[in-house]
Image 1 (cartoon, helix red, strand yellow):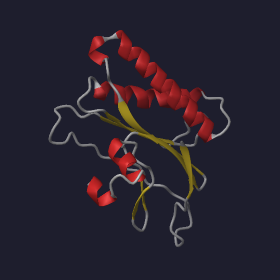
Image 2 (tube, one colour):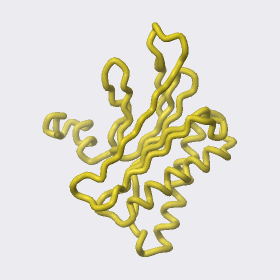
Image 3 (cartoon, one colour):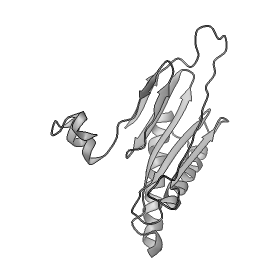
Image 4 (cartoon, one colour):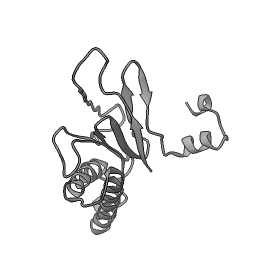
Length: 171
């Protein structure tokens, strides 16, 4: 699902609207290769005024680093040429196209077989944030605190959602 959140991008005492973005990736302690890919465009991409993407290759699977970079760049490419009406339709089609292409590529090369990635795609239009997420990469809003906006798509999160375990047990 594509989510829409109305938000204030500036504090009241500041006269101009602004948005600060930052990113940091870390290979972690388990992997030898960083499978994270971050794409930040503060210039227009097609009909979108900006674009923020985070993708994290699926650990334990082939070519997660390739998958995360490929999907992020493919989503950007699809959005740049999109003729869909509105950010929700644009993101839906771009993500679907990137996924279809990734699956096709993975079938053509045994080294890429089984690759996959999580994904967060976001854009801010005026004072509204539109985003989509797949998997367990997260989107947070940092303002006067930290608020998780995305919802994990994982087995554990589904167990919490369905009442099989509570949030504390999930940790």
